[in-house]
Image 1 (cartoon, rainbow, N blue to C red):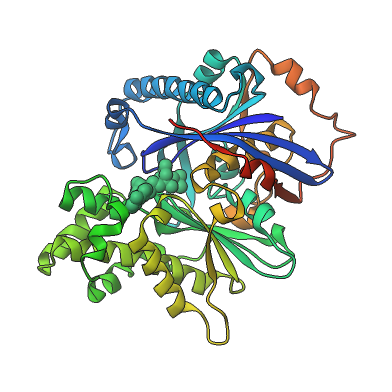
Image 2: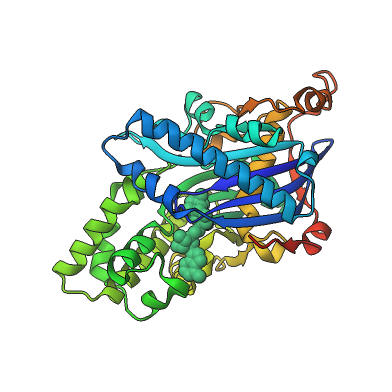
Length: 422
Ligand SMILES: Nc1ncnc2c1ncn2[C@@H]1O[C@H](COP(=O)(O)OP(=O)(O)OP(=O)(O)O)[C@@H](O)[C@H]1O
Ligand SMILES: [Mg+2]
């Protein structure tokens, strides 16, 4: 089945699309990547919704019309992604769209009590004629989970190994990890460790007037303030046991304001504040692994835009070295690209897989990762012109294979991949 995955994260930097071939073979899911794109957000749309996760109020009129407009954007990106992969849009069987998170509501006790992703799937179905799966998170929350991190399902089944505990770390707006114990992918745990790029981006915007600390140049020009990092590590979120999830509601602009003010009070220059935000991010990731990883991972599969920030990468290496238990080996920090999965395509590919599983009525969540009471089929379906033909290809219940136990990314197609220009 040919699935087009669409993802836009909390950084609001780009809409990512991946065209993915997905085929079940018994309990193994064969996945190969045909093409992918990253398209920057149109400035006006981004401007309209940036800050909503922290806004005291957003009018229903604005929310509903933004959702329609973002649906148009997603439909356009899907069409362009298919075109640049050299594939007719009509040959796409399914579009799986994560949507744009505008609020992820976690209460004072750490329970997820609401989550809202917008970008009307109905518009995507209408414009493309393709069947759409979207709105993955609410069902997990309904089952008592965090509704996040959902890529953990793919992480566990794709990266899990028989003999070694491994981890996956995505440095997006937030940072999330999945730890997969040796030989036990269904026992994986996952959680958001805290900020990924959100504080670094925010400080860069405030103090350097730039949307990001490009190549970590700003942080590299300063040395982190140890005392300020220590103080910031007191945030109760870092001390809460998983499962847990977070967002810009906690580590967004208000947190940046506090960080910048604390830096100013200490008389720190902008590069020191940037280095401090970078160090905090790295320490919160390494500290969370040290505290909650059921076994020390041998390798950490890295993805997300944060991997393009060398200052963050070296801070992470140092922090992991400090946290590695005596007698254990420093985990190898391995970009997912090394395994044939382009980092920029990873999350869109993950949602393509989750959408494929939803269409087949198979659970696509892991309770150990999201904290839900049970695995669920996450995602709702918006029928396209191809809906009946598509469901006709789903094996009837008596023949359907049991739950997928393993995902295999075919290297050959990834090797033949073409980087599709936006
Ligand atoms: N060259 C670079 N130097 C420094 N940082 C970079 C660079 N390129 C990308 N980044 C960082 O990566 C971020 C985007 O990462 P990504 O797309 O993984 O996040 P996201 O869209 O929020 O996804 P998620 O859903 O995982 O939160 C940018 O906001 C920026 O902070
Ligand atoms: Mg992004």
